Image (cartoon, rainbow, N blue to C red):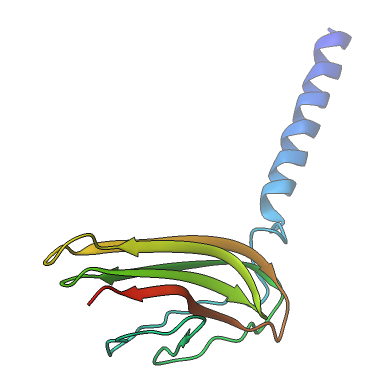
Length: 135
């Protein structure tokens, strides 16, 4: 009987510990300063030059340290053309993507994403690093 009472006490303590752990918010799961950002490009960029920064309708500068996900998607088409884009942080390329049309009336999409640990004040942008008009 003593054994069962001791086991029951241990189980109750374990349940109380689990209940307490469930009540305490985990710092890693609840950001102190949540950040969300979206940018769009409402105009065409034609005949982009090498290393040309693509200026979106809004600008992103990192407000708080954290892990950020950046996704870029771009298209090229109608006439044969090559377009290679990259996500850049403070002058350093992080990822790149390619859209390379082969023939007239051939549309191609390119893209990539980057998951980056960034710090306040870091600047993030999208730029070309290779572009060629065949016409």
